[in-house]
Amino acid sequence: MTKTLRLTSAQAMVKWLSVQMNEDGERFIDGVWGIFGHGNVAGLGEALEKAKADLPTWRGQNEQTMAHTAIAYAKTLKRKRAQAVTSSIGPGATNMVTAAALAHVNRIPVLFIPGDVFANRRPDPVLQQIEAFEDGTVSANDCFRPVVRYFDRISRPEHILTALPRALATMTDPATCGPVCLSFCQDTQAEAYDYPEAFFEPKVWRVRRPEPDAHELGSVAEMIKAAKSPVIVAGGGVIYSEAEEVLADFATKFGIPIVETQAGKSAIAQSHPMNYGASGVDGSEAANIVSKEADLVIGVGTRFQDFTTGSWSLFENPDRKLVSINVAAYDAVKHGAYPIVADAKVALEKLSGLLGGYKAGNANPEARAKWLATVDAHCADRKGGEGYLPMDCEVIGAVQRTSSDATVAMCAAGTMPGALKLLWQASQGGYHMEYGFSCMGYEVAGAMGLKLAAPHRDVVCFVGDGSYMMANSELATAVMRKVPFTVVLTDNRGYGCINRLQRGTGGEPFNNLYKDCNIEQGPQIDFVAHAASMGAHAVKAKDIADLEGHLAAAKGRDIPTVIVIDTDPMHGPGEAGGGSWWDVAVPEVSTSDKVAKARASYVDGMKRQNLVN
Image 1: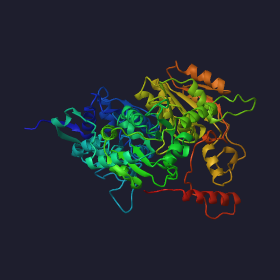
Image 2: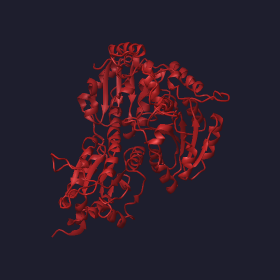
Image 3: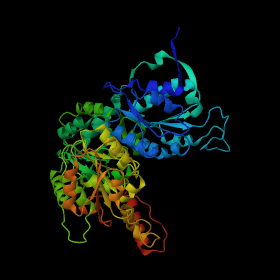
Image 4: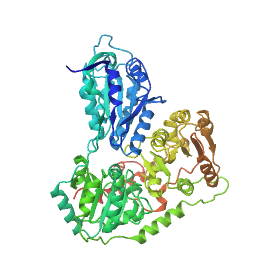
């Protein structure tokens, strides 16, 4: 006779999650971030309280930023561990939808457990319930469907017997990895069921390394042998596959330059002689030179996002071919690429054995050395006098000079992602960027998640005043939990990045910088006082030299440090050279001569797009 345990479905879910292990013998779901409300406090909240020794629960300040923390945690640990996030129904649940989209775009595992309406419908409509007039099965949680890799509604206690294994299978499969939503009806959470004891036996989830198809492998090997000037585009899949050393050896052995995406940056240290830096819109001159000349573009673990490819205007060689090594078939065939659907590390190892004495002929160490010298000069302290506002490149230079191999520069949106991709000289693993979704407000919460995952790292969070204003409250959580990291808050008094894009596409300055809004005077925000009010150590740097001093002093603290510095909103990273065209549609008809001129330039750019092989 089957032995059973009588538990509520919430208790059973928590018990099951607590015994799901990774290959390193650690719990795959590290713990649960939770803000409780009537939709989860009595059911899931009771279960989590009773199981806190086996599956810890942490309280955050906002459902979206709790999830950002979980995303950064999983990203830092190369998707080997993840965290869950729970909320009540209604606004608590919908607050998490943006974070789910962020995780989906970046292929990061997060388990979302929002409370849901009553499965029995007796008290309908309950507080915070969204009613679809045409469909009685819909709730607010259906918003998760397009932004998760697996969605399930738990409306009976026995549903978790199938839903939970499917969820973990999705989160641990490198080809399908991403967020999961288990929408948990609040009455079902409290219902009891006789669960088989065997369901709660510990399970180890192993990450697959799919082998490449022999035909695909052989064809790509022949394509590489025929190439005179190949280039490798290193994406985030290199890191998740732990193929960093294999890729470095592959590039060195065959003399193939490596260029980086935002997700792939720091897979190979900037100091490696085959690392030519970032490619594309925010790319280095050296990277874009070898990319423009390439007759074979080899993507490794990349989606070929528009910034990486200069909206497909970067690869100018009319004879170029495209290869994509990716564990996901969906990504491997994009833009007519010849695919190798396989684990990146395995594919590179097997390719290496097929290439014999092949050597590419397009290494350009002079261009690389010239670029790095330009970076050093561009990021130097200009030592401006009274009233001078430093540029973002000077701020990056200050952090670079006070950094070590343990430093991780992290960011998410605005000017700094492009500037850091272009200018930050990362050690291996020394870069963490959320730029698949470019979500403002990820930065502070993400820095906390990164530090929780890698306490030995010196985490420096770059954030503009615009992003800081959107989401900063997890700074209080980091103080409460004594999670130390450094926030460099660049105050350019508005959305400086988009202001420059607006002007670059022929528009007039409008509604981005505070001075260009429909107000008499912008807010006079004391960011130092604000951060200090949440318990952080907060200071204002008067110049770049002062910033360097504050950065050095922050390293010994056990709470977050926030350093505020006023910066020039008018200058981006492009003045350092490099960069390529970006497809941002300009109005075809306008009364503005500047817009008409920008439109003509836009049309010229479209002519350079090489979309398919």
